[in-house]
Image (cartoon, rainbow, N blue to C red):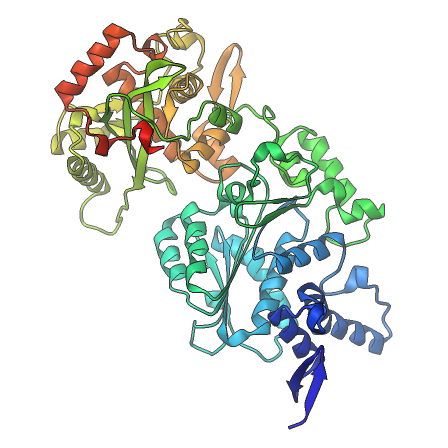
Amino acid sequence: MPALERYGLIFPEPATPASIELECFYRNWPESKGGLGTFRHLCNAIDLVWNIPKRIQAQQRGIAFDPDQHDTYIWNDWSEWMQRTFCEHKWVTVTGPGASWKTTSAALYGLARWYSSPHDTVVIVVSTTLDGLRRRIWKEVTKFYRINSGGIGNLVQSRNCIQFLKGSDDAGIFGLAVDKGDIGKAVGKIIGFHARNMIVIVDEMQTVNEAIVEACVNLESGAENFEFKGLGNADSHFDPHGRMSEPKEGWNSITPESAEWETKHGVCIHLDGFDSPNLKAGYDKYPGLLKQRDIDSTVEHYGENSPQFWQMRRGFWAPEGITRTILSETMIAKFRAMEKPIWISGFKQGAVLDPAFEGGDRCVLRFPRCGEIEVDDKAVLALDFGDYFIIKLDVTASEPIHYQIARAVKDECEKRTIPPSMFAYDSTGEGGGLGSIIAREWSPQIIGVEFGGRASDRPVSEINLRPCREEYYNRVTELWFGVRVLVQNGQARGLDAATATEFCKRQYSMRGMLMMVETKKDMKARVGSSPDLADTGAIAVELFRKTMGLMTASGVIGKKASEQFTEFAKKFDVASDPDNYLVAENF
């Protein structure tokens, strides 16, 4: 069989120019060996597979053709930058505005990677919902595949996959939607993939569950060649997109003008709307790419300092103070709320529940702790937010939902030897009926926390002696701001990223002179999810405020208070074994 020699390699017939470029792309064939380097081979492959055929067709039909307007994949500063970065770095996150071609570029890169070695490559493309998957990244994958499949693979649109061999999931491209109710199933599917070459592309990464991203990342250990590409609109430093985009030298090492930086895994590139190729050209040169009128419209509707402008036009995390939220990322870092507690003399374990009664809400059971830590050379009572897990409910079971929750609460608390007097739950609305069931099934000593109604008459704190009703519009605002006060006093520890994100997303406004958090309905409509995790944090503060005096006297424990805590610890068998809590020498 005749052979072709190209780029210092021998290719058997019937090799084509496109297959040669894809092979060199797969090999990352460098200039030192006669090649062009990974990026240039990818560019050639994209042109040969998708662009040149379209140009030839236009020429044959006598149709005017402008590559900047009509190519299947249009090259410009941003598209070249993304493809070059994808080629040169295994781990890449991209943050940028809407209409920046992030999704299109990543979809085409993943498809080209699969074309380069389809028999032993798995490409996983992930989005939050099935609708989001099919409208965004899977739509782009199938668009390019249908334009030129090269006779490779078997498209199964109903399953959102392209198999290398019909009926086999050993190699191919697989689209996964990770709706809230399917997290466990999605994680199981992800960890079930095994191939020599694994490419993971996560779209809308700021909204994807942390467990999904972790499962994708863990695929690296079983692959010979692994790549991760994460795409998102900058929302929070604490969501999966923000955490994986965090600069190696910390957030203070970059500014909104920063274009690219090193992360703990690889690199993040920032597509700033002010640098859109259309703006640089001075006119709408590239169809579908961010235009000046898009920026002007956002400024007109939301303002230049709005979160919408920063996220969807600058493509960068909004500066501190742009919105009024319960917590901020700067506040959390300044007061060390995410650090593990270092207990002085033990802690008391509690349990708190936010039940799920609305569609899409999660039933969250959290296990917070309260004890003494040292803050500014003083002993203070502090809250450790602790671990949490989601109680899985079976709507098809014969046992009613309320009884399933009651049983799970009792079982999990008894496993941890948490008495009913140290369990609190949201008793608002239907929660009251649930509380009655838990009281009958377990103990009437449980504590109900009502989120509805007016704020109370108790002082905001021992520093601010004004009644809560003179600071907060309603009870839910009082409870959520209790967390804020605790954080600002340096009395909060162990705040996990997911819960922190919810506290940083819930906004508040002023009703006259009173502060009022937005309703849960409004927050769900705005961000697409309910703050169930943060609700348990607010309940945890209330639990220990009632049972241990948390937030009294600014949390400062004098000699008398410290003696009282010691007696409390003895009475309730607070953990005092060094194996059961964190001590200074552990860090």
